Image 1 (cartoon, rainbow, N blue to C red):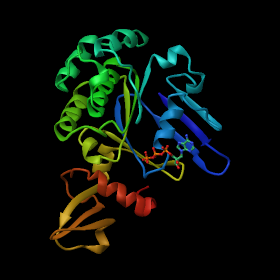
Image 2: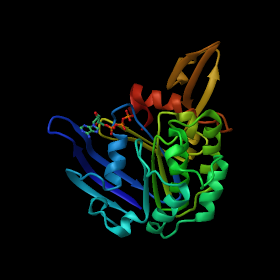
Image 3: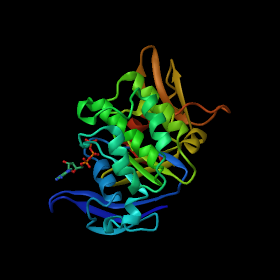
Length: 272
Ligand SMILES: Nc1ncnc2c1ncn2[C@@H]1O[C@H](COP(=O)(O)OP(=O)(O)OP(=O)(O)O)[C@@H](O)[C@H]1O
């Protein structure tokens, strides 16, 4: 569904942001996209949605070339950008005007998701807070049922209960032919919903693995004493350490995304 080869992008001649990036992804996944500030996550989403033109390489997504911005491509992908503005109309009017661009749009799902976020479509977008507007665009994105949904920092601006609602909504409103990519620094907001992880660094994808495979390769443990020989990465916590070690226990442990991300930033070559 996503096939990217040797992708290159820079805003100016001085700094290359995306450099020889390769990525293959199939449908049926919710993918967490992690990377440090400035790693190029938003830029990568803009490239995938055809808003900016690659300087080199090939991108084939849903059998289309994103930057050609064919109506057929735009109708099967949706980007929730980090910064956005919606028109000052009622949510209902916004939906009536915009939904026709998305052939699989599900209006009853939109109403249902708004309800879960404690909103109704009679409200005017003009009077909504930043967090409430974010909820409208998240609900709209999911209701498009687009094959590819890109969410750039979707939980920024959501309060604590809304983040829990976001996690529930994401888990239950997704079909096998869809691919959802979520970029975030708020790893706790996505650690229970993603089933795949990619990490961007130095212009490329340095890690690309399913969460299932991560649980089969590593144990994520809390220990009092460090067994240095068995530990790939550790961070001190009150009364001991959080550690990542090669899998030994039969039982799977819960992936600690934050710890794993820090471990990759420390030395990703240990994990590939
Ligand atoms: N329009 C632009 N013009 C010039 N440089 C830009 C532009 N947008 C982003 N950049 C630069 O490109 C680099 C990657 O930015 P980008 O926003 O893609 O990173 P990010 O991983 O999303 O960062 P963050 O986690 O901080 O949101 C940064 O160094 C940024 O300063």
